[in-house]
Length: 295
Ligand code: GDP
Ligand code: K
Ligand code: MG
Image (cartoon, rainbow, N blue to C red; front, top):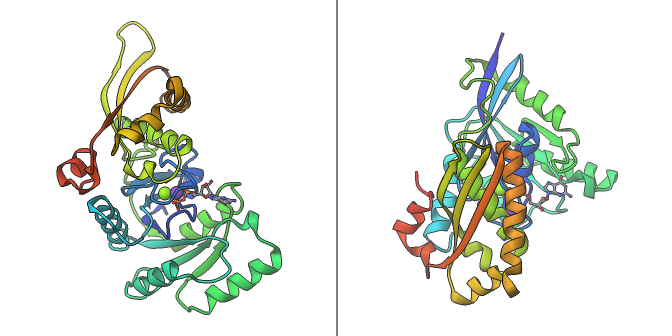
């Protein structure tokens, strides 16, 4: 019997949702960083083996929205509670249930979908603390199962897959074996650039960054793909920071992005990056939509 189903991954920002999803499919589908609100839209990743197919929905973290981009992100995350076969609620090693997790737990009480609690980042926990945390979550009486993992180190992820598989019902193979995401290559490529900006630039700037691919084209005779992309930010001063002294920072961003792209696409990449300013774009609906943050 072949089983399949849709599983959404929800939780506060930065608990490791994207890291978990990437670990399961073995490719960088969703970008990751130590900054909250790295993931902006719901991304599908598909895991397929001989016995089952699991379609994961990686969602933006649930937080209080401050602008139109934030509103889109939270809606995209809360929509993912609905119409799925299973919810994975990911929490980290925090010793107490904070207000962010509390809010999500209360939202989850209103749905009928079974919920598995994924306790991530156990590589940062003592065994005795792990036991206390499991007891704490168990007393919520909300979770079908509690699975401790380390998404970063890949610890216990196979066990989690087993738990998911056991809870799925008989179903079709929705996607062909080779397909691991619904994200077009252009989007994956622009996200890799945004991830590098997140890594190289600090403070509030990354939250106001969007990347637009202007051109992505393979050359006829060679195995080279030409990509040109614009990094949008919200202020002139931000532009200066992203470019850096003598263009050094932008060069670093470009080099790191190109290396990841070459891994992803399996071909040589010629990448051209530009930085432009668009003030307040996160509050301009047409820009938010243009950058792909749209239903
Ligand atoms: P998301 O916002 O929930 O999608 O979280 P990300 O996947 O972007 O990860 C947020 C941060 O937590 C990144 O710096 C990850 O490297 C880190 N992280 C994720 N999983 C683990 C883990 O199992 N252990 C540790 N120590 N760090 C992790
Ligand atoms: K993050
Ligand atoms: Mg994420």
